[in-house]
Length: 314
Image (tube, rainbow, N blue to C red):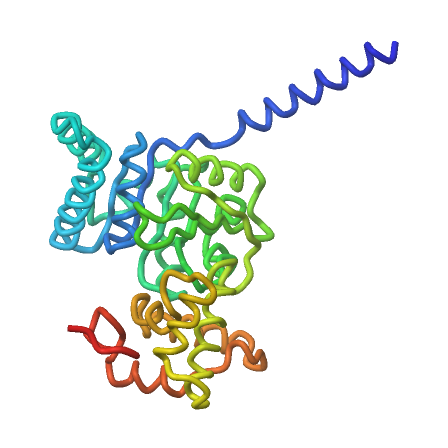
């Protein structure tokens, strides 16, 4: 009797698992809002893994440049992947590019998509307005995800009527090379939505990690205070930025020192994240502003992209 009972429980458990799994959204059609480096990268990896993708931005000119960038990136990937078979390389690029279409009208393309990934400017109001508008045109099953690195997902989700189908999906730059994706679950995100996004991330060949909707999620919450502590160490005159970079590369095994990484990421980006956190929790010592960072940003010395930040670049 005990054996029969165990078998019955196992059977019920298996059926429940299968049922829960069946309810997950199998993401096949993806709409990416934002044709910048992040949006284009997300579109590329999605298309290269068998998804149909619509890339959306404000102008045709931006989108054509994005497509050109994606094609160039794909050719580099294909050259390595099919080193001894140029024909297969060309076919891979052609097939992937054929899976990407472009549009300047998000509302007209989201009605048939499974997932909308937003990768636009880091401005809460702009993101809220975008999702509030798209919410009216999107199918009921569609999942909304933001690629924000610093804003609260819950605050963006609250602009919609689908808080249970809203989560964070934070990719890292450059998207085609970086393996990590942070999947951020708000208190309202359903388990079905969360599991669907975890599965989607894996189909992209990424390694997803889970995090609650906390400032900076995992990576930035640890990384930004580390970068700012390096800046404060330098501001106090306790070590040169060159020695700090060398110490962290040779002593901690980091591929880049903190000042090199700050310049690579962009000082304006770091300042934006820090300012947002400081506004949220002004008493937290980790979130205190930096005088040298503020000065460089005010002088438009933003790092590698402007030719000068904490270091000068040719």
